[in-house]
Length: 154
Image (cartoon, helix red, strand yellow):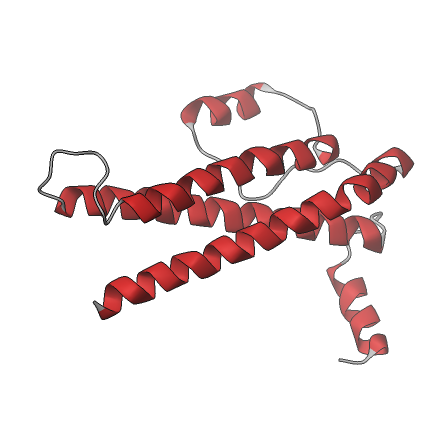
């Protein structure tokens, strides 16, 4: 893709009033959020299925142990992500937001505030941590795929 074409593509995806850098930050945060919640849902379902197939009364069986380890690492990554994401969120809490939190439903899109100078500075400081977190998510997905492949083949 040429640089001119990339610029046109960015302008097409732009939200009126949002600078390109702010859009890229929002998209990066949304992408990692989506990946984390997708992995969390997968592990929750996979552990549930493995436990239902297991005839053993013990909580940790050889089939469940790798899933539990990866699930715990995803939970830790979600906590880290919330810490990185928190300065960029709108802090408007209304009755509808509180109802959603109580019901347990989670939006896969963050309600991000406008990128002002302070938030850009925070982003520049937290970007290495965020990129490290995104790399951890990718590695965990690779481990999950390897686990699925080895269980399918055996």
